[in-house]
Image 1 (cartoon, helix red, strand yellow):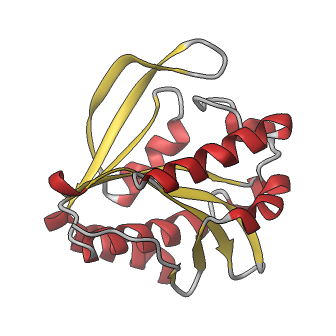
Image 2 (tube, helix red, strand yellow):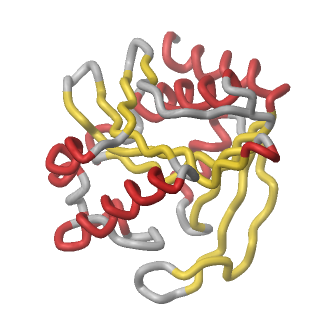
Image 3 (cartoon, helix red, strand yellow):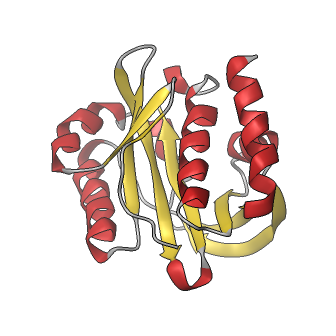
Length: 192
């Protein structure tokens, strides 16, 4: 598996590999406090630069590729999603740190972004895509199920949130041989 940064694009979204030039573009986009309610770290307000620097540091180490998500219908940046825990020897990658502004949630943005992200992963030789979320994040879990990802289990008290409480982490995955059906389902949602 050889996964490198690239602009990912389809009819609905463009995912730009995140660079320093995106800092001031994403700062106001990330400023909705509810985006960070269940996160492990905060990225709004005074916490934004720390969050942004952490994303760039992951990219510099080569174990993460962050993307600024651009919505074509409104011609604006609406969020972020990343390839995390990139493991070439095991041909697996996590998709995470996904968040969108209120106006982009429940729209074409997430299925279109997942179509682009998963397509890139499997095109680059991945055998497994992993997704995880807070046990209380029912909206995210529903989106993963609707996409066709398979629920794999819940790790109890797995990670601390920025508030200090321990969260249960819910895991989903998409395997390479499941990708065609997931892809077709995402396309049907986007074009139906």
